[in-house]
Structures are given as C-alpha cells and as structure tokens.
Image (cartoon, rainbow over all chains, first blue to last red; front, top):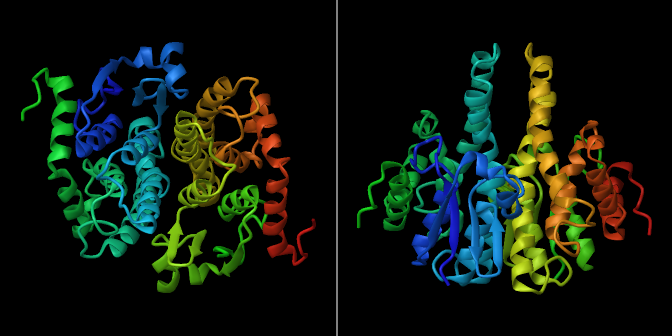
Length: 217
Length: 217
C-alpha cells in the first residue's frame, strides 16, 4: 500500500530541505518505498481535519491504510522498522542506532531550534544581538561533543542508519549559519549524507513542489 | 541480567523527579525489572570514561551485558520493547504510542527546556524579565494543543504507554511554574501519572540518593 505524507504547500525555506517532510521523504527513498504527497496550507494545518492527524498542527503526517502517524522521528522509525536498510540487524547495534535517533531530536536539535527562534521570532527584539552569541555557544557545546564522538568515522556507529539520517537532517538546519564550518568532520559528515542518491531524490522532490519542475532522475 | 543506569550524584533538584534518570527508573519499575544505579559527579560526567558511554556528558546511561545505551528516550524504548506493559500489542497502536514518545521529547519538551534556559542560564541577563512571557507563551501553545487532544481521556491513546510516561515526565518540569494550572485536564493527567505505584517507587528511589533514607515500600 502506498503511504501518503503531508508537506507544506508554502514552506518558509522554499523547499530547500529544511521542512520536516524531508526526513520522511529521505527515509522512504532510502528503502525504495514510493509515496504520495498531500500539500497542506498554513491555515489548513491548524484546522480540525489536519489536527486529527497532527495534534500540534504541523507537518509531516503519514497515512498508510488504517494507520495515521505524526512526528517525523516516529515516522522515520516506522519506516525503518518495516523495511531493510535503516537499522542494523544486530540487536545491540539496532538499539544504539535508535539512541542516535533520539540524540538527534532531543539533544542536538533543541539548541539549534533555539537559534531559529532567536532569529525568526525574536530577531526584532532589543536583546537579539546580545543574546545570539549565548545561543550559538550552546550549539557549539553540542557540536564539539558530536564532532569528538564522530572522529574520522563516516557515520556515527558503523553503517549509515536512521540515526545518521536524522542527525544529518538536524545539522542541515545550520547551513544558513557558519557554525558547522568550525567542525570540518561534521561538515564532511553532512556532505556525505547529502551525497546519498536517496537524499538527492528526496531533496529534488521537495524542491519541485516550489519550482513546479518535476524532479530529475 | 540486571541493568545498571547512571544518575546524578548531586542533582540540581535534589532528587525531586526532574533529572532524566527518573524516566528510566519509572519505566523499569513499570515492567518490574530490578536495576543497579551508579552515581556520577558533575566532573566525572565530563571525563572520557563517562563520555565513552554518553558522548554529551549527561545522565542517564544504561548498561546491560554488552549493550551500552544513552538518551533517556532510547532507553525507555529499549525497556518497552523487551518487556510487556509499556507498548500496546496491536501494531498500529504501538506505532502511535511511539509517536507520542517522540512528541513528548521533540515537540513538547524543547519549549519547556527553553524556560529552564531562560531562568537558570539567562535569569541574570538584562532581557530576562521581558523575554520570559514570550517563552511562556510558546509553552502555552503546545500545552493548549496537548490539552485539546487529551480531552477527558485518561491517557493519550488508549491504555497507559511509554508515550504517556515520557509526556508526564516532560510536563513535570513545569511544576515549578504555574503554567499547568491553566489546563486542568493536563494537571489531572500528570497527577494520574504520579499516582502510579511504579512512579512512586521510582521517585522514592531517586529521592533516597539525596536524603540518604532508603526508599519505602
């Protein structure tokens, strides 16, 4: 059965890979699962029909037969659990890959989202300029720790996993700042993720919503 | 095999249920799995030996034979996957419970953590007083949506699950503010979680680290 996901009809980044449907598209492309996309406007996202699927009025959602899911992390996990390629077979390695999924979303993403809040929601406040360096330093703390753990490995724990997929997706949010430049191994790690054919297909498909051009390849 | 978790030797809240080992203790108590605790000082948390287990220098960690895990969400999931009682048997209901786990940690917790940052790390800044209402309003947005979804149900989706466990644990962080008081059904939801015998055992065990009194019961 072909699943249907939701995505922004109008995305703040104009389809440059930052909206959270990108994570789900990428996971579906990694496992070779075709999918349908239903675009949702900002106003429709806040209506009861969408909130029945997504209580917080956000995208993406995932519908497959009787199953309706929300939260990109949970959707990526569901895809990883039902297809080969995103979680290791070895039981301990699988548990560790899941730990990296949670680390991406609960430890690394929150300080990065704080940067968005500081710039987009509080950029016009009198404290904005003074506060920004504090926000950036909290991100640096996490990036330094992540960089130390990654070292010169290709991926966080053995082969590419759903943990890497979510971590790369989270780090991509820093593309508009120069923070990643301070950690060459993390820059290379993100580039390695972006170079995956599945990433490119997902990125092109998301971008095509905004350019109106069909994805290549 | 008895797993070993790590917890704060000195916790900022003096063992009042807010440190993240509480979530893991609670899950272990729900499923009836005994566990050992190794206390870690703030300085030891930042040393290479602990960072080998927890790259971000935090607690809790989870060791069981050859397996070493970090991230409280991942540890709770591991426990839920290997014992009955925290995830439904029905496959779709299980996926939805996992969605609530991610929602607790990636959608509801980040704005709540921002309140901690605002009070503890930026409480002495000149913008603190002016900024706090914005931070609180972002929490209210999430609480309002969560309250609307919960309605008059006991738990978020059918029976108590690991999703409720993490959501209650995240909402408990608001105990020091009055924000939850504005949502009576969420207050009752948190109280329902705290009333569970497994919660009480976990809470007493965490508190006993600081009072030196053995947990009752």
